[in-house]
Figure: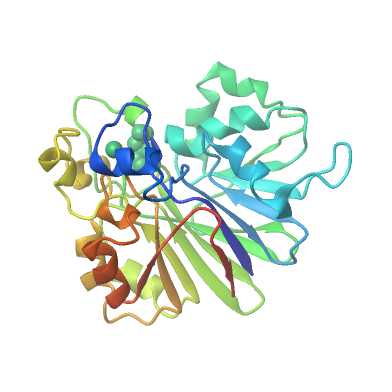
Length: 293
Ligand code: MLT
Ligand code: MN
Ligand code: ZN
């Protein structure tokens, strides 16, 4: 199994267009690497690829990734796109993929419903991009030799669907993790997750690789930095400082944080927090990082 991190940042990216925090300023100045928004590409054979989450940066991500370049006038190695929730950072890139190029679009029924409720998504012509509905715990073959099983993880509805009361530990079809298998290799991709209950730890145990929600370092960092009013928990994300101890005793081949918010000190390769994560056995995802399992 080959995995390429197309974008390691959370919604907004690094730098985020309207953010003057230290990390965003450092990225603008080139002192730390910029990061595009949340997406990975996966293949079992190196020829046919699936993209998990279509970020608003997908055009630049595809251009920067030779494995996904066209192989003929209108031939592409992209066979499938799977989205793990309806958040804008995970679906807005679908609009970029609208040029009558065939691929299969996989999601749960609830996520497909959220997309279908937006008439603009009709521009991604279903004649070329069939909507494949995946039930929870159902396994589908995304590309030859690469299967995906979707499972509910604690999360919430997309921001644009939030009502007056928001349930943040919601289990259902709105936020899913993905179990990827190719041959005897197993990887888990969980870019958004509000909690790590025992059953999830058991599911992760023994994986060759885990790509996990690294949105925030600490639950209240956006409030303390004056960047927002929400905790990570309120946004449906658990903090890295909670995730690391929760998985400390779990056997995992490689553990990699993805979906980093620009407030997260892990975006700075030289920060003490990055050193702390590395000492705890974690890697911090970066754009273009390739993992072969
Ligand atoms: C999130 O991961 O919390 C969302 O991407 C937030 C958003 O939609 O901006
Ligand atoms: Mn997000
Ligand atoms: Zn910032």
